[in-house]
Length: 375
Image 1 (cartoon, rainbow, N blue to C red):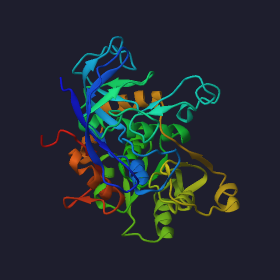
Image 2: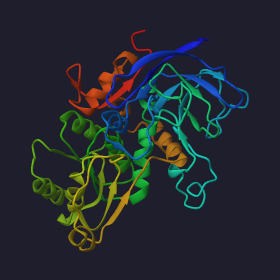
Image 3: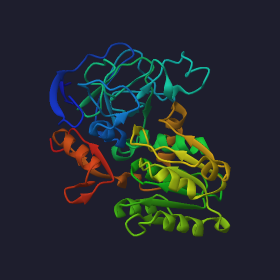
């Protein structure tokens, strides 16, 4: 087994990721060491990298990357089962849930909102005083935090790497519910929006409408269950987009459910305007502070009697259900991964995601860091 592994370190917002080499730990009891096959570049991480105000405290320098998949290469004593009770052995492919909660604080117990755990730590998030080899933009991950949940899977890595973002989509659907036959809109079909499209379809939506400015993403949305697509470039006026949604909705009264997954503030009032009376709106795209918008409490909320909720992160049960959904392979999930970048191109991936959305002349849908690419 290797004794050292390469990691990428970020010293400041907007800086280049620097590759360093560090000694690999010997797994102690209750821990494991895994070889990272892929780690997705998350849109929220791109916001943090770009310097947008985060909703969590960030400490630099730090290691990033939390959408991680790869095989176990060493097991400490007692690390012998995954979160679902499946036996673990060296060579098994696993996906760790990045957030590790304490299970005892107010949010873990009384509020039943463990994603806001007062004592939680997370793999691949800046700060927290965690040691190296705890983030996914690296060759290895040390699975060491007590209470870490890992999920064993035989899915190919390009699908397994989507388990964490899929759990975000499942969590959002949980927040508002989708009833069979309803009309659903997803604003913004980046990776999480695309997976939300598939979740909506699998939940029984009769029609899913995807809204985005990138044709490649809209084409992928169709593959994942979207029935109607609206390209912002072809329909530049909000009132026209709202009109299309009404035309496609049941009896022309508006969508039953709208998910805002674009992370664009202006999309919020537009999405509310797409709803029918009594519809449900889920905000799931703003994990970083991108600004504020005006909402009229009378016309947007009371007069339409809507339900307005926010969705944040995911929970162990959404991970488990997401794994069940991905393993069904109802859709070609692996096609979401359009770019596999070696560690040396990590910065390039972030620049593209925060800017042009193009790498090597191809539109980006999902970028993953594949640390062993080309080696």
